[in-house]
Image (cartoon, rainbow, N blue to C red; front, side, top):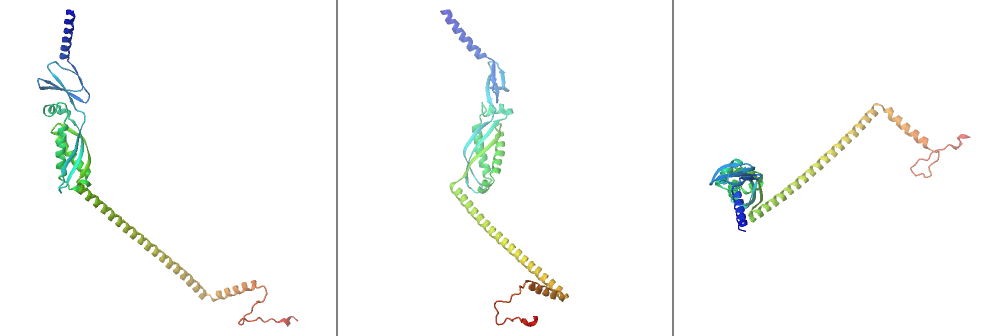
Length: 280
């Protein structure tokens, strides 16, 4: 029994010793292994298997993309209008800056607090260069300015900006109400101007139509007058044509007469003379 107890204790001690001196370790994907010896950095290992002696220590350092959420960042425009915004900053540690960041800022690559502070400072500095109307109208330009300034700021911490998502961009309630009122008035003004333009266009169209109709009437009258003038000139040059037409009309009347006398004779109408005894 004593032998068994000694064997068990010896096994446990041996196992613990083996764990203590176990040299095989793994650096996960998206990380770097920081090897230190008595607190001093000896080397930075890439992903994969790492063999280290027991007097050295391995710290896993993250170099993957991380997010820092900054809610209600405050600033003030150049025309002293307070403004707030919420941002999400995606960043990562530069692989060649792992040793520096490990020594100065973070043992695992988490720079959330530094990124939040830097973002607040950058937002204040950028918004101070814009008036409130410009801050609204040129939001994409403001976002780009924040991005560029934050990149320079985070380089001091050995990090790089991947992208910035700016949301919940808002001014004070009074200023927002004034903006909404101004937008409403401008929309009404624009609608009124468009209505005036439409009426003017319709009036111009009516004038053009009337002018075209008047011109067409003048041209038609002129054409008719020219036709009559040509006919009169032709008749004046040849009077026999008029007489010929009169004869043709009389011939047509004679051909249509059926020999019957009129049933009703008016006082002024001539009574035709019939020679009834001429045939005898």
